[in-house]
Length: 351
Image 1 (cartoon, rainbow, N blue to C red):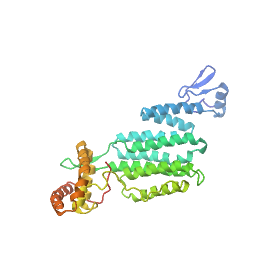
Image 2: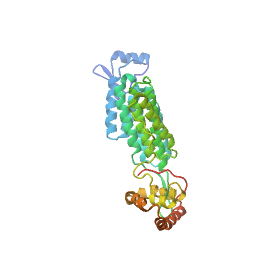
Image 3: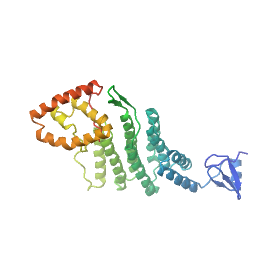
Image 4: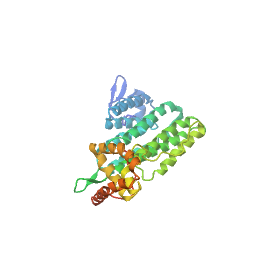
């Protein structure tokens, strides 16, 4: 005869109370007949819906308080007893990924994000059309939290030269992790949409969420080759239009970093004649990895972008304007290069 073991959590700490055997770990109750069957056969069919709901509520409370360790514990319990619950599948790993952002250990962060990415990849496998309204709310929440995490602050490593100037960081490694999670979620959304008939309007809901993430990554993902995401964005627009002809397809997907600062380094571009040349690449790196790291630096950037477009518009094509600025910029670029700032091709970050 086997020892009495809780089917919910595996604990053998069972106490008889009021005619039931009660698990002291998770609170599940078993009748005497169920307990006997468990000891003889090792299994008994149990309705665990109350258990799942109870621990879902505990997990959500912990998540709301950003107690990620507690949230992970309860979501794991939910997933053990309801393996198809997409909320538990995602959030059982999300908290650990969030917690890794306060640790500068990049390899540890990459490992936790890989687990989260694997969880995101199976969301569509467990999405049930029969529970569509319930699951749609969870999809919305997951979407929000993926973007929120990508916008959050995090610890990273950096190197400075002898002048205290930052010449290298591994910030972009974490940005890549955010991009990977977003892209995996887009794939899951595409697969969820494919569960509906080809021209079913319900597909649009998931395409629009995927489009939102593609646009976010294009704008914030510091992509080395953004054209691929522009193509994806155009594809989503076409898919939506095929179902809803009133949906307008833009002539061209937005360029990466198409914000107030796009086309930045206005003066340097006017002086050197191109936004993509070694001198301007150097200055753009200095802007993104040195100036933008401090409050005063960011204030300078905002002031520069408020004033320089007008100056360049009025005087940018004149020789005296170029002659005025070129010596100063040449000296600055030379010093930055000597301090280790590279002059190789560069994609802007957004500020």
